[in-house]
Image (cartoon, rainbow over all chains, first blue to last red; front, side):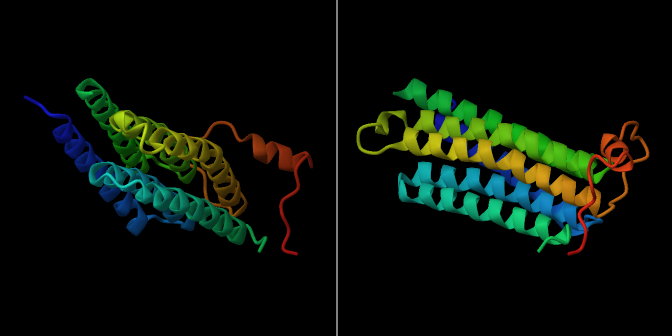
Length: 88
Length: 124
């Protein structure tokens, strides 16, 4: 019998695998933009993992952490793009 | 509400596989621009599916907390910000003169720059 918790744990494992792959691109990416894209992908995966942690530990306050983290990541990507475009 | 939990967990699994496909594309694509493309679109879809899964999993907690409301806020936020950041990043990469892949056939931005429709950003 497959319980929903087991499926959730498998999903967290798959997301961790995705984060490892993005980490490889983050380490060896040839240009700056590769690294920024890998960082963005890592951030989105970790947003999902934070919300899964909030779901499993039944605390709604962790969801606000995910919202603020997404906002900070967006601002970070915009600032780096503006900087390498010589606009800052 | 066991069936809602099961539906949420399956949705979460589908979203996580979409995130995995995005990461594989990030590893295997030949070019910065293709990497931005896969790394943003597929991961947006995966994150939205996973957040819907979280909202369905916590569907019976409707009365003592607004899980669905916060999930919707996060989904709308990701839908608004993720394409904007990918577009700005790709434009910055183009003007930074990151080389295009050898397989590139069409470059409309170069034609526009040559016809003086768009100016390159100068160092002011």
